[in-house]
Length: 333
Image 1 (tube, one colour):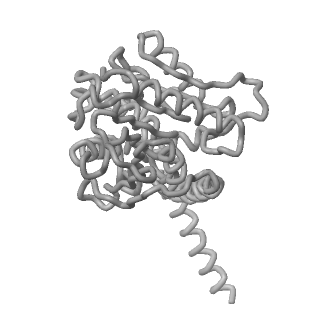
Image 2: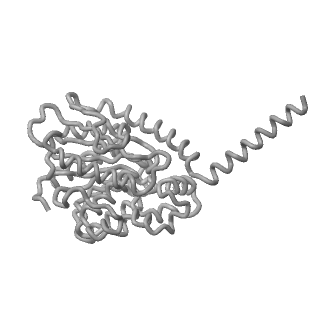
Image 3: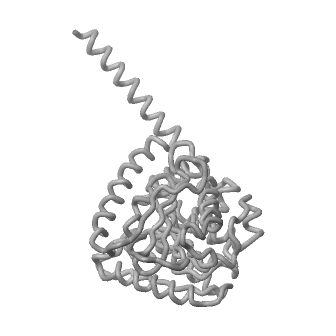
């Protein structure tokens, strides 16, 4: 019996060491835990939004924009749509390593009920996927939507690119690729639509400066370091020359499209959003922003805008819709 106990103890010790090394040598074991938590959060958000979805939205799911298994999108159209509609192409969040288009499906139906076509883009987040693959995929999705505009019922000259959290960073980066040839050359991605087609961006709860997100210490440092290690594919991602280009806040120009930018006062990413809004405004880019003072109570968390049961969530939706009306009514840039 003692020999059996020692054998079992030895096996447990070996497994514990293997598990420790797995977490030390790769971010992906931790990512699996994060992916599970994000999935639960998306499901709760979607459940709250069900009652806000207007009737009659026509939805087509899992339409391909490429050949990969994750290169698919959902399309929503308002009831009885008869003319090509402006389209909001939305990139979901999930810290670049989690989430799915299903997590924003009902919010996009709410937007579609206001007279817009909405597209929820899927992109790769699983093991082995790293930067800049999702950037290439979002760019490709835009190209597909533009090329197939007639059959999708959309107006290819009135495209809004949008995203939340990591999706906001991806949307901002792709917008900069589209509007700044020099930056596109640095990243090595050729835009799939013309700058004039991209009429604006919606950036909610996003991260736009990877170095600013990696301040040592603090409750979130382990999370940030894990997801950016996984997404960049480089443990020392702060020093990686190509990954620094993902810090889009450092590369925006006056050619950047008009933007709606918001974050909650309880969101640790809010300072980045406020700095981006100020930077763009200083360059003369039209910016509509919604931020709350630090003492606003209750503190508004990351992704506060998806909770339409709160006055702040509704305020964000109302300001977003006002931005869309103004931006899409203006002449093409």
